[in-house]
Length: 246
Image (tube, rainbow, N blue to C red):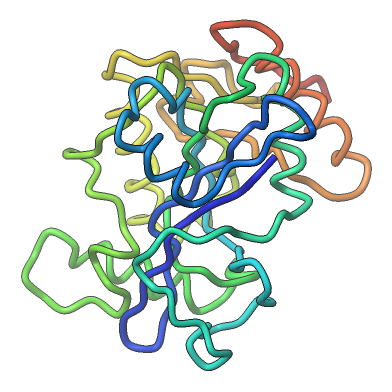
């Protein structure tokens, strides 16, 4: 497994605007940033699909998590760089490695703001306020291009889309809920295999409508159950929707 991405910044805030997981063909094979760039010139050939998560918490190789990487000496914004491997990426790799060796998987986010533990914080209040202004000319607190998805014009490469951005939305954040639901509804109209994990609360069609998609990452007793369920999603080609029993 190797992880790559592209960070951008504006107003002393960092965003992870592109993120790729490479599934190595074997233990000895490694690719470089130059190799990545060449592969991305032929995305249809090399990108297997897309995984949607909530927000990134990633760091360039050699750096630790920081609210503003520039203060730590990082100067490679808007360039592809290698990214530190994390437990979350290991969970994804474990599920993908059987069928996607030699392929890239794109990771995209509801919000690109690169920050730990944004739930629940005033940041989400600001996101919700921003989304209320998104289609207007009003200024947003977070960069409207770097942080948010242009859903109606979104372009996705590969054959599958896995939704894993979570299911617990604060009912007061009506614009965030509408944003997640709009993404689900739009992607489900595209010519992609859309998959996710859910539980007994809703059936698959209801999950698509409500944007109720379990995260592949959990703590405590659910940690292993979610990771194993993710393996079930990707144990077949094309991948499949998986229901987790309570």
